[in-house]
Every structure is written in C-alpha cells, then in structure tokens.
Image (tube, rainbow, N blue to C red):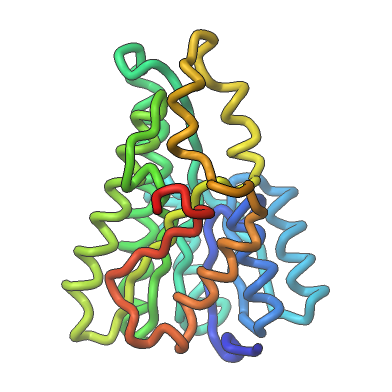
Length: 251
C-alpha cells in the first residue's frame, strides 16, 4: 500500500518504540516524514532508515514540553516541506510510584511531556492541518480507560489525551479535520520493558493481571499499523474514535 504518497507526516517520539515503528510503517507507504524526538542519535537513525526505505525524511531534535522548541520545529517542518497533512502525537514517558508518594516533580514531568507536550504540538500544527484538511492520531493507552496501579501521573496524562481527542474531533469536524486515538496495551517497547524496574519494591503484582493481554505481548508494529489506518483516507469516516490495540486486555 502507498496510502501516504504526497502526504507530509510529523511523528513525535520517533526515536524508539511505537513512534519508530510508525516512522517505519509510513515510510513503507510513501510518506514524507518529519521525525521528532529528544534523542538526537536515535531520531537520526529513524530518519536514515526511512530514507533507506525510499521515503523523504528528516530528523529534528525537539522537546515537546518546550513551547518555543515546538513552535520553532513545526515552522521549520512546514518551511521544509511546504505543508503538513498528518500529526502523530506519540511522544511520551512513564514514571511509577505509590499514588500517595508521587513527587511533584514526577507529576510535572509526566504531565508536561505526555499531556502538555501533546497540547503544544497539536496547537502548533492545527493551522497547517486545517489548511490541508488533515488529521491527528493521538497515543492514548489502556490506562485512559481502566485503572493502572502505581501509574497515577501517566494514567492521568493518557486520560487527558483521550478527552482532548474527543474535543478536537467535535470542534473541527466541520472544517475537515479528523482526530482519533490508539489505546495500546501489552506492547513490547523500551518504555514497557523499563516499567518493571521502575515499580515500587513492594508493588502488589496481583494487581497487574487485569491489565495484561489475554494471550501475549506484541511488538510496536501492531500499533503502527493501526495508526497508519487511522491516518489514511481509509479512515475518512472515522473521527473522534479510539482503537484499542491490547490483545483483549479490556475486552
């Protein structure tokens, strides 16, 4: 499939995990890619791989929680490619703690990157997306929809992203913009691999059975394929929706 030929797509969190898998998938489908991340070497690797796959791609180092950096980077992307058709808001991080022990700095960090960063990137891209009648795909989570112990800030940020998805979809639908979300769960990424080492030492592991896939964990490419569908014209009548990619975790 070449659903993204002549489409410019900006992907945040492009250096690893679901963001990198999204870059790889959209490169295969002919997208022109703006790859954004704070990890300079890894995001350049992602752009290099996209070019090897035959796509036009460039890397930008950008902290999505930094408003000036976001505005500057989006302006550079549009100046470079002349337009913007799709925004994939994938950048995010996770920290864990007992909810009654969450340090303020941890809360601010997670909310700052995951939720405020998504807001800042969306705000900067909206005028360009509206001009092209484009679309946004948000990275929500199963934690947007059910309780995830020891992940209060992360869950709050992802719940906010889901609410943002609905609001934007309704507000801008008549102007031709679509906004949808994926809600991954049980996906093997560097972030999920680090979760076990971040949990409090006295965590109650019995609480995690209800947020695990019924069969098995799978790779980030399974989420990237769903993002590609939502971002493509195949999903022209899908707006304000979320798609769980979680191996029946919440079924």
